[in-house]
Figure 1: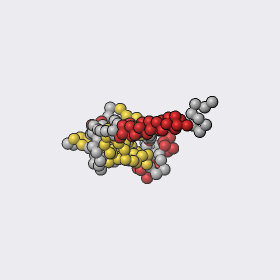
Figure 2: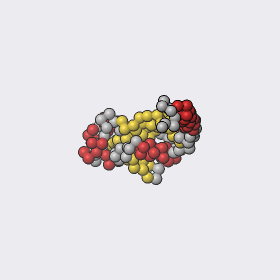
Figure 3: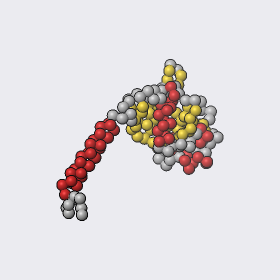
Figure 4: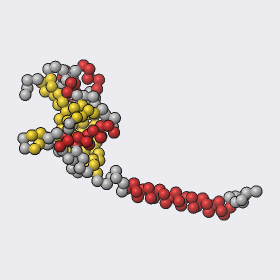
Length: 171
């Protein structure tokens, strides 16, 4: 005995049609919700570049214990991303680095290490550390450099974090 007949019958086809329609409604609802969720509302398009070209171009400046963490091309990261509205550069870089599994160390508004490169990555004859620009400019308040925590990102910002080096005694 088959309750729906030998070929599935009318009731089985009706149930499948209703199930299919319900699945379509759920998928459509999720698509609409997905377009208006918190991940896209209140976000800004920002480009982030993290690089250490100075170390690639000056291999004698790299301390031996850090040579293995310097990428061959000097690039850690270069991509368009979404920043949160009113997000500081400091919070943005920490969030992105962690999401990309790129080690980052920061404290008191200063990002001291990215990709395991800190100021200790240079040999004794050089100083080094991370600097940043926003849209090609070092953010300043009058004559004072701003820390990453003092910079609020805006739509279209192009941010570059660069490992910078110099010979001791140059400055």
